[in-house]
Structure formats: structure tokens, C-alpha cells
Length: 447
Image (cartoon, rainbow, N blue to C red; front, side, top):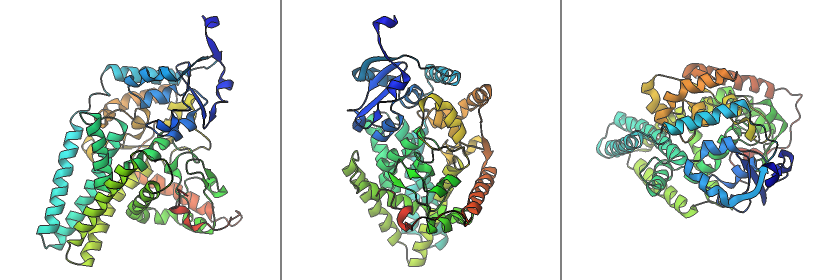
């Protein structure tokens, strides 16, 4: 009975959303996660962004059933009195429960095994081709194959970061560090830091780091007003350099995607050697050192500098396809300003994502992430299940009159270029005020 319980209102819960005072509600119970936020596996920023509200849908999306048993120690003794669950949320929770009962979250297939075998085979062929062949064409092919390896290693790191793909947690962590740090040179710590924030605040211009590419790209004219990135804790200034670059972004989009990997290398170093609290910093740095040992050594085995440059550019060009894919998934999605809210989890994911339609034989190449909406709604779901649940998700979107955007790779490119061109033309409007120059904005995101 209500008289036997202690209650707080939604408005009272909103008062607890500052660092050091973080309360959340899950299925009507209120929890104090203030002291535990720094130890949260998904990062402290996620809890700070979602504090002061009901987060049931987000909790269900990101946590296995075993996580519920740990909530008790954070229970405040309060229940949320006047929170109304939307019909969409009710259906989403019901769907998640059905998927769990069907065992879809545990049925991973043999994806991890196939991925490991393919990575070993590709790396062996690349090393053999570089060391044993004197043919320029073979070396070019090895560079292209290395790019494919990096793409697939990134998917392996992504999968192991969202759910357990190996037989134990230890092996799963090993897969993260090997596939991410050692093979690709991109820190799994950097990925977790940015990627979890992206999922929680999908397409929020000031909270989602995956849309904050100033001064190179601006997917919304709101960036022209120098908004502040809550994620990076700095202003994304629209200065003369930004205006020039953004006004040409529809021309520079593909060239920048080709060399976009360089920025990921830089971001990794900036984070690992920053003053931020980084889980497993030493292990992450060790993995990066492994990459920067074998990769330059392999390139140095090529006979001359022209082939070395060709080899590196070829590998980067292939990874550009993955960078393009990720931007296609979100650049043309609906955007908003402000923090994420727990009461419209399903709606925010449908509005901010775009699926890429393709045949099933292309699932390996896309890593399953062409089903971007399905992945955002159920991030713990193995990639082998995403195509299976797609019709169900589509039906649920139709039931609640929500968008289910799915485009071919070609159409998604066309739509993205049109959006970039539209923003570029507006960026050249000389009536807009221009703040002072901050040319280091592109890479100095960590302060």
C-alpha cells in the first residue's frame, strides 16, 4: 500500500542530477548512484547525463538480467510516485522481454569464431605478401586487405564492447584489447568513452560526440552559433576557419573520410595521455605500443617510399568505407539540443538513426551495423540476430507512427551529401557573426 512506502515525485527526482548527487529511477524504484558513478563500466558521463529521471528503458537496453541483482545496494528506500510510462515504452519493454525469453541475447552463433579466423588469415596474407613478394600489385592488394582487416577488427572490438562474444569475461576483454588497441591502433578505452555517450544521447548536438566534428563538418546550422559540447566540456566555436571548412564540406567529405583514421589515432593519444580517469590506462597504452611497433615495421619492409605511401593510403581508403557507413547512419537523422531523456528512449533512437538496406551476404562487410536502429534499441543483441528482429522493430515503429528509415547505400550517400551541401551554403551567409579563431578545434577535443 502507498502509505507503507516512501515516495518522491518526478520533480523531486530532477533535483538529484549533479555530480556527487546522482539519483535515477528504474521500474519505479529510486537509486542513489553518486558514489558508484566513477566505477560504472559504461562511464561516469552516462550516469551524469541520465540522472534525475527514470532510466528503465536505457537500463534494459544495456544490462543483462544478472545486473538487476546489484541494484539493491543503491536503493534509497524511495519509490517514484507520479511517473507515467508511455505506450511506446511498454511495448519496447515487452519486446525486450520476449527477445530474452527466446534466448536471442545469448544465441551468438559462430560470429566470434569466424571473425577471429578471418583476422588471423588476413593478417597472415598481408605479412606474407609484403615480405615474400616483390610485385607492386601484390603490395597494393596487401594494403587493401589490411584495410579490410582493420574494418573487421573494429567490428570485433565493437561487438565485444557491447556484449560478451567469448567464452569468459577475461577472454572477452582480451578480444577488446587485441582487436582494438593491438590490431587497429585505436584504444578500446576511447571507444567506450565516446560510444556509450553516443548511444545514450543519440544525435544530441551538444551531448553526442559522434556529431561534434567542428570545424570540419556541421550537420546542423545550430553549430553556427558556437554551441558548447557538454561531452568535451568546451565550446565548438564557429570561427573563420570553421566557416571556410564547413562551407566546402560536401566536397571534402570523402577525402576526409579517407584520412579520418589519422584523427582516430590522435584522439586515442589525447585521451590516454590526458588527466582524465581512464580504466586500464596502462594496458591500453601497451596495446597501442604493440600497434605502433608492428605496423611501422611492416611498412618499412616495403622496398621504397612510393610503395609505402601507396600501401598506407590503400589501407586507409578501405577503412573510409566504414567511416562513411557510420556517418550515413546518423548525419541525416533528426537532431536536437539538450540532454537525453529516459521517457522517450525508443522515440529518440528511431529519430536519430538510418538503416542501410542490403542483401544478407553483405552482413559480414557491414558488421551487422547496417541495422543501426535495431542495434541502438538492443545494443546487447548479437549481430547475427539483428536481421531477424528487423521486421518486428519495423512493425512496432508503424504501430506508434514512428519513423523507420532504411536507405540503400547509394541513396544514403546522396541524402548525406545533400544535407552537407545545404548546411555548407548556409555557412557562407556573411550575415552570420564570426567569433575569434580557434584553429586547433578539430583535434584538441580533450583540452
